[in-house]
Image (cartoon, rainbow, N blue to C red; front, side):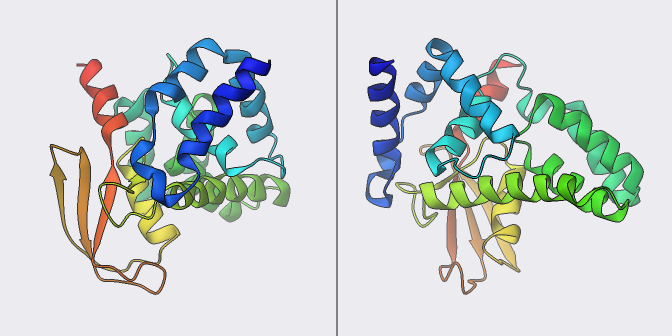
Length: 220
């Protein structure tokens, strides 16, 4: 247990400040998920229970660590694609049903959390359930925007699914206009040109999508 404490402490000391963002180590996240699974599972249980004592680094471990689980589908999830169709149809019942299905095996899906939130409100589900989706959704967004400032490839916002970029921009940073998107194949960052907002007063935003690219390339 003592060894585990130092491993986890080392990981999140590196992720804890904007000045050290270039030291973020996905390999160490994978090491915790692979070799310290009971610890990861304990943190996951706290996340699922909406434990208000969860720290930013706990949420980070759940979010990034989830992409190393065998069942993680990443950008190849058929249900995620189906959900988008129901969103286009504005079918609240199907949005709710599909979002719940996704969250049963991918509780860090921002798409599923967001549309479970919207559809559960529309369907007048219990307030406690609605608040649970809101809490998880905002916890992940706050973590992403804490672990990086998005202003350079050295301190990018890190996402495990490109769809999560839009949630960060629109759900957290109040970005209204996106002008262009491009992938820097050297840094594996999506570079997005935006109209600045009060919460992000810069015209260029960087998102590290290396985990997504790595995961999807292995699935081909």
